[in-house]
Image (cartoon, rainbow, N blue to C red; front, top):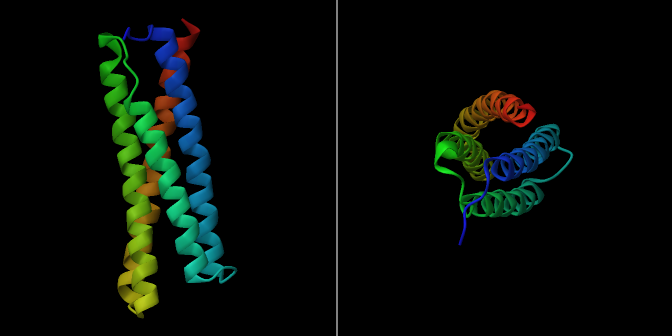
Amino acid sequence: MFGLTKRQFLKKSKKSLQQTGIQMLALRGLMNKESKGVISLREAQRSLDTLRNQVENSFSTYEKLNPPSKCLPLQLKIFNSMIIFHSSLVSYSESLNNSEKGLTNEADLLLNESARKLKKYQEIALSLSKEIDSYLKK
C-alpha cells in the first residue's frame, strides 16, 4: 500500500486531534457531572468505558496511517499526546473504582492526577494543532 502525501497526512492528523479534543471535552464533562453528583458512579463508569473505546478506536485508526518519512516525528508526538490522554482516562477509571470501594483519599489523588494529565494533553494538543496548521498554510 502506498503511503500518504504530506498534506494528506497533515489533514488526517488534524482530524484525529479534533476527534480526541471532542473526547477530551466529553471526559471533562463526565468528571464534572460525577463530582457534582449529577450521575452515579455506575453511570460514570459506563460512560467512561464508552469513551475509552472511542479513544482506542481513534488511536488504532491513526496508527494505521502510513505517513511520509519526514512526518514520522510529528506522528510520534501525536501518539505521545494520545497516550497521555489515555493515561488520564485510566487514572479517572481507577478513581471511580476507588470511590466505589470507599477509598476517598486514593480516589481524590487519582482524580487530581487525571486532571493534571488532561491539562498536559490539552497543552500538547494545542501546540501540535498549531504546528499542523502552520504546515498546512505552506
